[in-house]
Length: 479
Ligand code: ARG
Image (cartoon, rainbow, N blue to C red; front, side):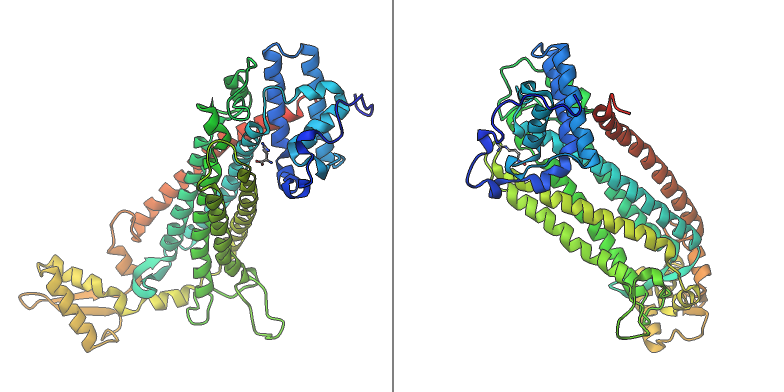
């Protein structure tokens, strides 16, 4: 069939998309990026029409071949996109009909663009989650490597952005690891919850044709078919969840971005101002700005905006399909692109961070960081903690510099002197609490983080297999 153009059924522009408002209604600019998913859904639908006895095996072969030829045209850039056909669905159907003749007109039997677009979106979501998860896994690995390298490097821990108690750079970095790991978990859970195929729901009430939604669901790698046809064509929970996942991920990234900006200031001086952080100033020759971290920080605004845009569009919509739903794709595509870029930028930035260990260590030797340790040492000797707290506070107020360097003292009941080293390493060694910054606890935490990262890799490979199943469906019969 390639090259020869068969007779075409119907007018060039079908009546259902013919309107003076065509330009306003068109979604092609956005939904053409779903084209491979759209073709995959159509391939499964053609097979279903065959299984229902509505198409002969020969007709099924012709339509499958035609759809795959369309996919090849899309891939090599020769597909003739036509704006006047409104959307990706009608573009594909029209081109198929040009390639295989009037039989192409059977493609939409028992199907509406309403269940069709819902399928496209779920297939897109699956592939997007797989890509985002791969990017997040790379970031997790980068953070893990940096945490290992700086495992024992002391740094001040902060609350209210005031020096509080000692931690290590490795422990601090791992706190970011666990945030991103929850983001990864949410993405997988979102993919799992949206693992139901809407195909067969039709416009809203299914079809009179004997189609089997379970069959097409299975063919497209979905765990199940829809439960309710009205819900199937209007449910945008998968997109809303994905946008929430991305917004929170972007918020997490922005916190890390902010810390990099702060720590690279001369005032903190914890990070060397290397070229990897960003670029310079066109006016001030001495400048090296943390632009990468700044744009990571800014990205959260866009992701939150995308989430709000979708939720606002969905609010108050009556069942089932409403054209408002067409507006769901733009924020999702935007957030996926921008958050992927953010995660990629962080994965490159984290390994390039150069921590100034000297500076971090001297900031960690600040005696104030050990005031609580001293109060706890008194409590361990039987002083009610509230009383110990007051005693130590009074000591610090009387001698703000922490008196003698390297040690803190307090008088225990009975007159014994409690002496505490303010060596950061000694202070860290005092901390045995699991999940804390002490060396043994941190070693265990690192092991848990590595194991978690490896388990996530396994989850990702099963999702990737489903994505590949769709690629194989579209490519079948081609080399
Ligand atoms: N472009 C539409 C969307 O994205 C496709 C479904 C159109 N359905 C309709 N009945 N006009 O939602």
